[in-house]
Length: 414
Image (cartoon, one colour):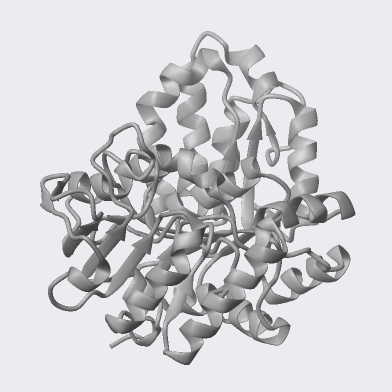
């Protein structure tokens, strides 16, 4: 049994039975997808829709309350008016349910009364050994057993090694792309972090054998700072961890509070240094977050950091070279055979072979792009190059399609 199997979050991701409180037959309502997704994807556990006004939902028998569900329930998902949530949590306690997801909003992010109600629920949970994800959350998602708690219609899942930790519903509308194209292992949206926070998520996914890459979007650090650093360092020692930390400015912190009810007070310079010390990769926007996540998901770790650069423009090659040195990479030293083949497609004057200016080479050999690509592919056989940064113009894309599999396969299998 792995360490992740012993963690309490395993009961969320690998629940053998799920009850959906607020399930509905009405396809026009968001809650319809909470049950429909699990049926459509083929969730492998037992599924219990809960709605006192329906006898059947999504082809399954519906129950009037949590207490009416026969047998044990591993996970209860609550998506009803926030005013009804405390009573349903009490029902779960009476049913001896230990894991609850509160999708409903209207708690700490909504003011003093919501904060009071959230505290009441938390006290009840702690007194009875119950763990709660949320409120104001959409998750968990686990592609291994087709568990997907989401308002977005999920039609397929593509399993991968990338797991997301988020504190935002903005990923829900991206699920079709994430689940169908990128390849996801698990997703955990922490919501208001009333109980479960980023420390718990990192501890679990850091030890999860199926998770090869962790991508994390944070607004606030809610858990204990020392525990967070220990969990982050441990995770970074085993797999890449990419973090997007929003709420970096005073105005951004206030905006974050309107969604989660927790004002971000962290000093951004301190946070930046802590991430760096732990070995995490900090990104600045969503484009970088998804870009790094896809790169680490699809490409294997490098054996070393010796880099070959092939660019269309000499200036772009210089920029790439600066970036390599800035981030600790070294320019590869090619062997004699590679140097000889690159010189054959070089202009008649001396020119650096790394970075290699493909734009100038094309001016001399434009009539034979296949010859150019064949010479460039010699870099793949050079043991002195661990990775290749390559830019191709549109006129050579057809040629790239012919040898592209060889280029990618050379590094992946080498």
